[in-house]
Length: 232
Image 1 (cartoon, helix red, strand yellow):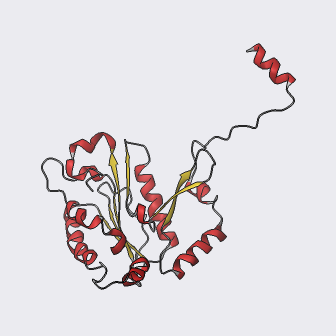
Image 2 (cartoon, rainbow, N blue to C red):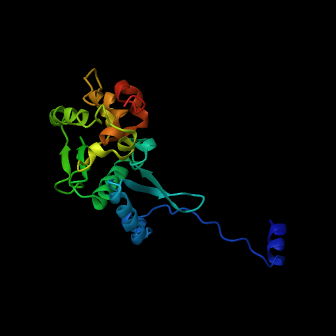
Image 3 (tube, rainbow, N blue to C red):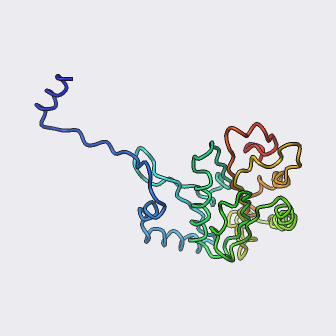
């Protein structure tokens, strides 16, 4: 220890301080790190292409301290799953996701079905952006009405390659987000899992404009086999 101190005292060049991620940061402070002009330019570019703004910042990368995103316009991230144990920020992430998507898009561009049995997301979604459900009966009713509409949003059989890339058949129609907090709670104790009808629609989410976002508690995934993330 004395040798290290002596070397440091004699060396005129000091290494730069190591930047560390903040342990805690409010959403307002986090969002203030982003350039509003860059955000406006990105939104304008997407709207010119007939796409809404579906890029959501998740946090800061440890190496470069730059924002990391999930972009639901990217064909590789049509859906998103969060798996963690209790008090690890799963519901906080969904709250941030809903607020960010609604801040950057109009109800004409985006509609949501928020499934929230514990009502922790109640009031987060602004009026006009969709529906919040907290009971199994309500979920079954809304999915029963919504799923045929999603299936009807597939491209026509005679679609061209260019039209497929531009998703022309979806112009003027909103993206649909089905957001489920604590998805592991469904299908337990022998109950029929109301989320299973979504499974055949997931692979065509890019074409139909449907996105599924769910949170699962890590320690309970094994209890509800049908609602495991790899199955949903």
